[in-house]
Length: 409
View 1: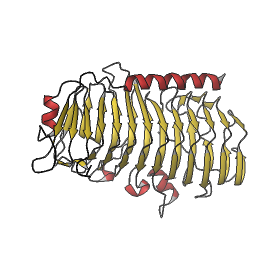
View 2: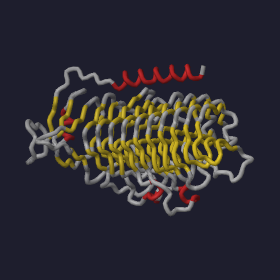
View 3: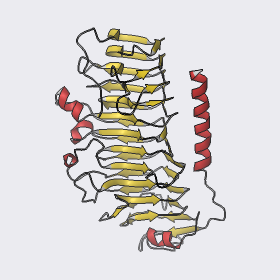
View 4: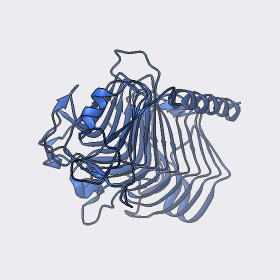
């Protein structure tokens, strides 16, 4: 029954996202942008901002290769597309100064609009003066908006001092997708085939009820604990529903840090915190992190066929129900976990005991080269897993040494 209901949720969610993210171009016109003195056949505008101001809904703004010193705000359905000219396709949007819009300093802000497509741009938030937790900092910010972010290079969302924001939720996002509760939604953003790097806090964050985030085939890279701040590759929270598929996420190992220090500055490949029912995390490759997938509350979540390797400090998959309610009626299946042996307590899949984790299935996973395969999941069904070179297949609270608790506030 659980498997059947989960499949129905997945199909409905996928169908809904395709509908919401579909472009309705109609009689779209193409407006061409090129910098003076650079090759750009048929250029009509010298700045992207001028083209946005002149465009009608659903028009396409074709942007020729050049450096554009602009901060952009989009409030109607448009497509911004970098184009190739004479074998060059680097369209760099790099404002010299970032102003704050709706609480966030972002290179591109999309707000209160549907069908906004941004593709084949290099988006650099490096010229920012943000030094603390406020204002927010992001390279791209979708607020109460829908659309597609495809084939971009997204980078530079780094605080001037990474340790200047000590709040758990942090600051410095490659892509920030959010709702503020003022509009009912639903909102859908499809983030696909992007290169995302050099961020302080999260590569992609999706948060808020009414938001559906489809995050697929991206390459996400961060320095991990070396940044001096908590860092997550993909973060889905506060009611947002995520489909996180086929991404390559690479963070950083503890290195010379002590275990305690590394846990406090840890990186997590994919983090779910009270994510919406039906969230899916599958076929991702997650390497060099302190927790591959960290789940903090939720239900009807499906974690499957991920490759998680080189995990230190915590575990490949950590699950808990504290703060955000129980974690239940979910499936963790078919994942491959390799090398979670540093320190000596890291396991393949581990529960934070006594936090409301129950009624889940942990099935058909392979754990190799780890302290243990599965730890503390006494109220879940654990069956058909394969354990290779593990000190323990499964452990419980009576066995020692006990791994450090994997809990989040």
